[in-house]
Amino acid sequence: MAAEKPFVKIAAGEWIPYSKIIMKEDGEIKIEGPMGHLLEIFTKLLDFEYQLLPAPGNLWGGPLPNGSWTGMLGMLQRQEVELAIAPFFVTDQREMVCDFSDPVYIDHQSILMVRPQIQSDLSGFFKPFTSQVWILVLMSLVLVIAAMNSVVRCEARIFHIQHTSTCSKITLWVIKALSQESSEWLPKKDGGRLIVTTWLLASLVFMSSYSGILTAMLTVPRVTIPIDSLEDLVSQTDLPWRLEAASMMYSFFEESEEDIGRKVFAEKVGTFQDCWAARQNIASGEFAAICDSTTMMKAMSWDFSTTGRCHLYISREKAYSNGILSIAFKTKSRYLSQVNKILAHLKETGHLGKWLGEQITNTSVCLKPPSADIGDGISPLNLQAFAGPFLVLLVGVGVALLAFIGEHLLNSCYKDRLDQHESGEMR
Image (cartoon, rainbow, N blue to C red):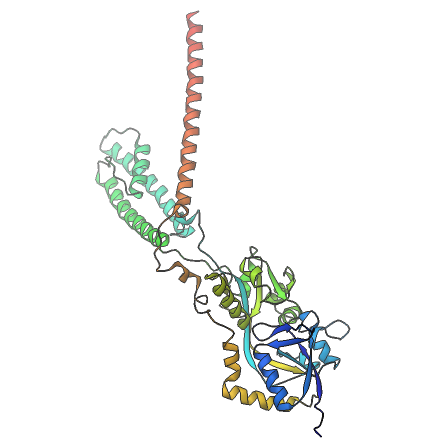
């Protein structure tokens, strides 16, 4: 008579792409994905029957003030299950309530957010030069006007040259030279003409550099990456961020002793269930999330497969590097040593990597930097590219119109007073 197989209770949580929970018609659950393959092998080689118990709230678990734990880690702590068939990031704190198998995968955490896009910049035509360069150009213009005005007036006195409206002529000439326009007026003597030559050369360099850089910026636009690290995340206010509930990263930032880590935790706008469940919210720009790279690539794969476009971006700098993912067992489980031998064989044969690779496709395009979205690098100029200059033109025309109306009103007032004065004299 065959011996009865041991019966094992196993906690199961959904973490796509590692594991996916399927509800059967009879109310039982099954697990698919790499963790499902592992469970099948465990049951065959270790010869046991099992029952899958869903993780409460699909939480991996975190500590409570009274010392107990939530989620699957709480089930292991209370020894309600033999193991949790899900990958856990191994931490010292978690090792106090359960035993971990040998590493199954190595992963890291980064920031997942909506993909940066090319945006119109009303002040873009100022960007070829820094503010310091613009200030120096303006100072140079004022100094050249003052210097030329002084020299021309001195030369007029020395050589007895008549001059009228010298300051306005010089100011207009200096501005025209800077904007590469021709002018018929020139100083009559060498001192003034030497300043003219110097300013013409400087203006040539200024405007040639400006026009070349502006052309490059307009025809080959760059995409600004506002968040590429934790420092960028906490220093901006445009995109809020959330942490995964009852996760390793939640505890990591909650207990962080670094200023950035404390700020990440203190200024978060809430939590979310997991990165896969929140992928649409992240892609629509509702918030940024700190996720594991495997789930992020799975979300990118889904996004590109369903829309044909890339709406997600992964920060270049890692928030947590080389995290060890293992399977969690209750303390002193009799199956742990045997599972470690199975895992070693599966890693040697490449099965673990193969199972995970089958879950992630179509990510190579979306892993490229956002600047690659421009295509061949050349784009036609549209109205948005010239929004700034057109706005300046509109404001200039408006100010000129107001000035014209003001002149007309002043002139009318002046004529009325003059008429009243003349009529008074006649009487």
